[in-house]
Image (cartoon, rainbow, N blue to C red; front, side):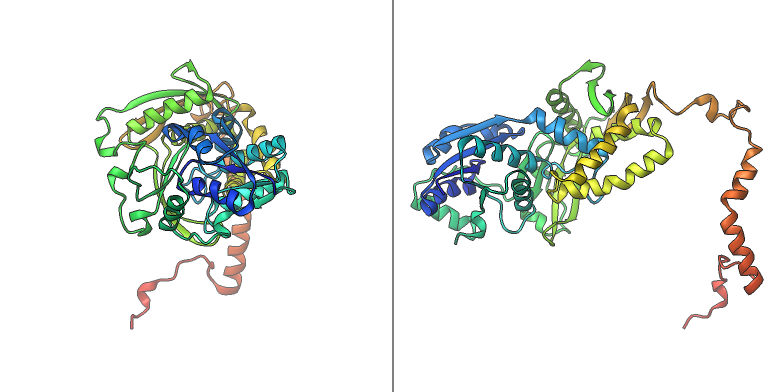
Length: 415
C-alpha cells in the first residue's frame, strides 16, 4: 500500500494510528474528519494531524447532509432501536465512511482505515459501507492487528514516538457527539444498577432543575420534514441546534438503556438527544391525524426493521432503499403544525393540525347520520366477531362451555 485515508478524530487512538500506519506499512496517510457537529473537538485538528505526519488533511462540514439525508429520513420512518435509542451514532458512521471512500478515490488511495475497536458496532458500520461502495479498497483496522491493548499501551506508544497527546484530564466515560446526540458509555455505567451521575450530562439539565414554567412551541412539517419553529423558517442545522437548546434547557431527551449490540454483547449506555426527541414526538403527533389506520399500523411494523438496518450498519442496502421509498409515500400528506409542551424532562403533543387531516370533529361527534349510522355497527360486529362465535358454539357443543371461560381458581387447593 502506498496511500491510506484514515477516519481521524484527533484523539489518542487515531493520533497513534496515524503514526502506526506509516511505521507499519511505510505509506502516505491522509486524514479525513467529518464535521457532524462535534463542536470544540474540531479545534486545532488540522495542525495536529499535519504535525503528527499526515500528508494532507480533509475536514468537511457534513451537518446538513447528515440531517437531511440520514437523521430526518430515520425520523420519518419512525425508527427507534429497542424502544429507546434514536440511532445518533448508527446513522453517522455510514455518512463518514461514504465520504472517506470518495476521498480515497479522489486521492488514488489504496486503503482506508478506522479507529474502531474489535468489540463494538462501529467497525461493522464503517466496513459494510466500504464494502458497499468500493470493495477493492484495502481495510486496515489497527485494533485488530496491533499489540496495543489499553489506553496505557497507547500512551506509551505516543510517548515513544513523540506524538502530541492532550494533557487535559480524560473523562471516565467513552463519548460520541454530533449535532443529533451525545452518547455516554463506560465508567460507572458498566454497572447497569448504578444511576448516572448528574455531572456526566452535557446537553441537558436535570429535570428537577428545569424551569418551573412549561415551554410551548410549534413545529411546522412539510411532507414529513421539519421546516419551521414557532412560525420561523429554519435550515436543518439551525432548526436542530435550536431544538437542542430548548429541549436541553427543559431536561428533555435523556435515555438510559441496556441494548443488544450487533456483535453479540449487551451494552449499557446513556444518551442525550433533546432536539431529536422533540422531532420524533412532534412527527408522531402529526402522523396521527394524517395517516389512515392501515398505513399507520403497517408503518409501525417496518419501523423496527428500519431501525435494525440502521443499527447494524446496513444503510447502503437495497432493503433500506426500498423501505425509504415506502416511507416517502407515507409522508406525502404529513404536512401541518404540531404544538408541544416541554416541562421538566417531558415532551408532550398538545395540539396538531393539517390540511390533510383525516380527523373531522363533525364526524367524530356522530352528529351526521349520513356519515355514520350507529345502527350499522350491529352488522359490523356480527361479521367481525363471527370467528369468535363459531369457535364458542363448537366448544359448547363438544365441551359444554366456551374454551375462553375463565376457570374458578377458588376451587383449587394450594399445597
